[in-house]
Image (cartoon, rainbow, N blue to C red; front, side, top):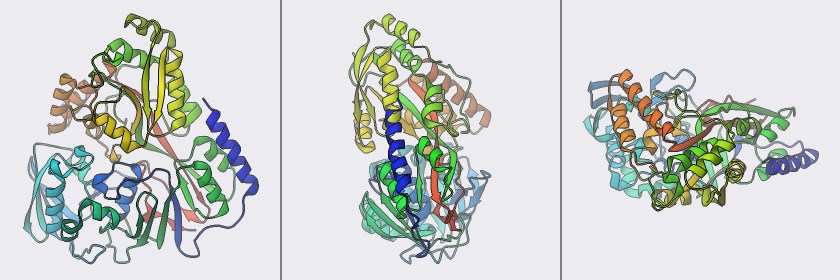
Length: 505
């Protein structure tokens, strides 16, 4: 299980011996950062990668901002907001704000953005983030109303996260592809260079308004995609990188003893889970349509060991299809403690005394996926391990061609259970359960205005998901950040790199 981690540690040790003392670009006021994953499109509505969330928060603004330290909602592009009725929100907008291309921000931008992303045919990647909005209407230049399709009490939370406001004239001209190549927002950083999937250069927005994100201190952020952690480490030591993140636990532990680096560990809302084809989308004969097979998968894996040996830090075992801090995330659900003999017994009772073979898909964290595959193999579920890019796996998943996979979801850092359980269990293209009872409860939970009613129905849905073993939730993630002593940064628990809060020491 730890073989690849040991190789990484050995490589890191070699790098330690060769480490130089030159640091990157404080002198040039340039923060050099590595991303691990290629970003398919910088347009925040047309990617669902964590790197995209990071860039969205730097380049664009939403109407509302949730303070990650206090969870307090604050006005951002909107100065205030009022519920007119259960499905109508009115916003008074901030005046004097300009987009990076000089366009003045006003109600036209909000109306255009909302009306564009709310239309399913426009293809926003994560429909859950926007499909609760019906339309927007301009009342005057700095007053706008957003109309909801139905009651959606989590609207403010979503508006504080993934709903970024775009310049109407520019976006109408260039569309998602143009926005991906030359992004324009109102945020604390503007984009001066894009090499798709490889390189992004951000420069401080000198005209950024005095909002809750704060004005950025560092002049330039140079981001390169470097998939290999050993290469990232080499560049960190040679001085061509200032900050890396999502660093494996063993390496971050080693680096924490070195005086030239700061190592920070913070929890995240990202949950790793196994999704299984309970609905038979890959074919009626798939073993995962059988409850006992899905239960066997749950019993086969030692989650506690995965957390203690691989993830470490602030990660925790997860038993339910959401993150514990999210509103409505019921914790009192069925647990499947590690019991490989029970897993084998359940497989035999399901008609597979000798086990069976299956394709097993993974898109990130090969070490974790390989460890899970070893547990499955040990009880007789022989895995054909397939490592794909996220976009490729998502496409297969949407077509119903994935029997079992290890995936993760960070909920766009939305602190509401709907951002996870409703994303995957409401009969959409990523729903491999297609359970009518779960759907009925989620429909009530997502739209009820009474918080207790919401909790009740999220609880019912989550308990059924656990009882039926539609998923095998694994663990929450934590993130290790490593940066030079020249950099001052306090990470937040929402897995968002906030360049605007970073400073030089």
